[in-house]
Length: 143
Image (cartoon, rainbow, N blue to C red; front, side):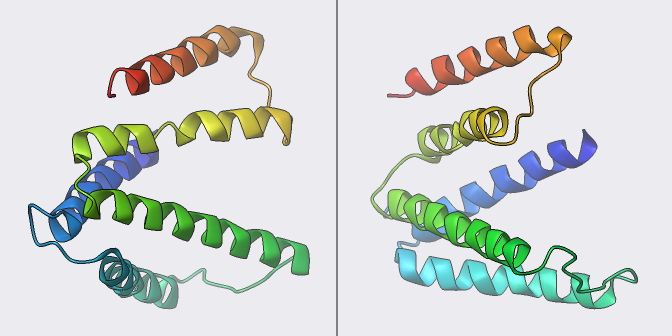
């Protein structure tokens, strides 16, 4: 739970900085440049983290399929990021674009249920349904 909240905090702050860097009313950096500098910033954190992590072992127990799936995940994340950068570069408000982006949680829940068979337990089903409805309602109010 704590890691989820910290993730939300850092992604939220990151999105505001993306808007500052790429928004036409701010620094107006183009989406291509923003993408490159975000990649550099990620490398500044991730490379030392993996190099100095005592438990770092590059092992792929399930072979090429796992590698392909991980690479595909990175490709999908990068494409989504480009859409985010492009939206900010066209002047989208962070207060509207970021909540719309986070409707992705519904996509993840649906795919988790359909493809991974991650059905909520009986006690969680109603909470999942109510949460999904609240996300859709909140996103629809942004228009």
